[in-house]
Image (cartoon, rainbow, N blue to C red; front, side, top):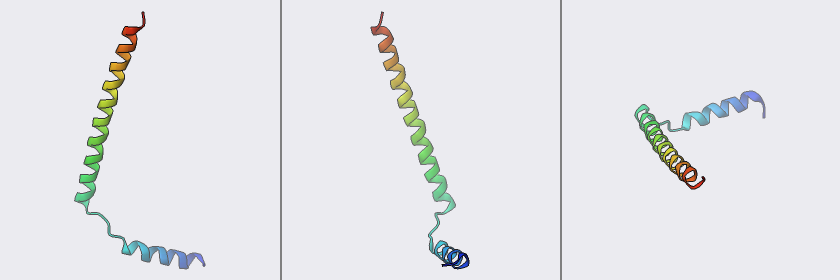
Length: 59
C-alpha cells in the first residue's frame, strides 16, 4: 500500500464520521468541567479534614 492510497482511504473514512454539533461539544465540555471542579472540591475537603485530624492526633 502506498502513501497516496493510504491518505485517500483515510480521507474517505473521515467523511463517514458523524461529528458532534457545536452545541453537543459545548455541553460535554461543561459537564466535564463541572465534574472536575466538584471532584477537586471533594478531594480538597477530604485532604484538609484528614490533615487536621492527623495534626490533632499527633502531639
